[in-house]
Image 1 (cartoon, rainbow, N blue to C red):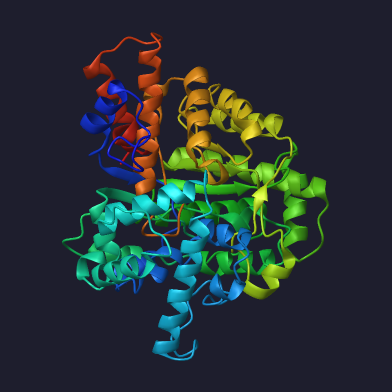
Image 2 (spheres, rainbow, N blue to C red):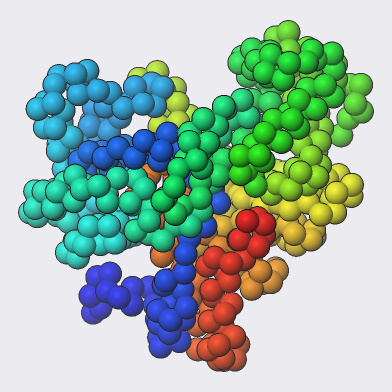
Length: 480
């Protein structure tokens, strides 16, 4: 029986251990997609206690706690509907807030004991080890000692957000930002000296695509006001979006991101789509067909702009969000009540990519699927286009089996040596050991090919390949 989470965790055999410890372990991190708040990076305030650092905004942990029957007050009760954390005063004072935080931490510890086979068990213990030096599994019996040790460290300056990023050797990260954002916090971070992590904004134009949203008319009006030019047509709006891209690029952005959650392409002529845009802008209802025509046309035009302006386009496909209306009424949106979508979209994504690459062959794209049933379809689609990648295992696929399968599919449909590696897709500053998790699985996969005689052992060649996948490929692909 092997010890839990020893230095050779997930590494089966000498070749895997060699690849990980000599070539992957100490590579830097370029996290090209996450949801960290740039304001918190700039302000660099202490994280508070372990409940704050471990549980605030971590929807993976919230989902597990709900599945274990934990009362919602111990999960999201400390969060306002807008996603911000309630003050101590709102929670009854500092003493009451501290007591409540310990209770929700303890509720998670109890939950964790039942998470056999859940990646949270691995992630959480990697976080305790890599940030806090705690090597024993956390249980109810040692929960207080773990709490006290972590809280003492979190009070130190090196355990504020910037220190946590530096501990994990993060060189660059890309946050997720609305096109109308002023990028105030990114500018302030960039102006400072002495912080070694490059923080880049990502261009996330959800509301520009989602014409069915009640917020769409007001959003387009705000875009028009910010642009300072009157919109007469859809083309005017797209031009304004392009100028916002320029602003983002001036502030270090190299990547965009889209979430596609239903049908997103039906071919249509410009005049028809412009009419749909005009209807949506004045708040008229749109049919399913209207929406697919509008989204498809806009997505293609944005893809062309990204290519011309040097952005990588990320497409995250297949989330079914905020399914529990009762929970949304209590705690707001984006609290972890999401699941897999199962719509058919292979022909749609093929049409979108064909329209983009036919005009802009230098486009760079990463495709992510949430439903693992779509692995082969999306991987083979990505391989049809130069500089189009099947993205790393995302969200509900971000576990040992999911990562292994994603790597297997990538390897057999493309060129593994060109893979751009891993990201966190997280709101938590403690999430960076997930890169280690991925790297161990990657090294074990490559070594397994060697162990079975399916690929020759050449330490220098395979070591260099591993290093590229862990860091340099992403740096090159994103042009940073």
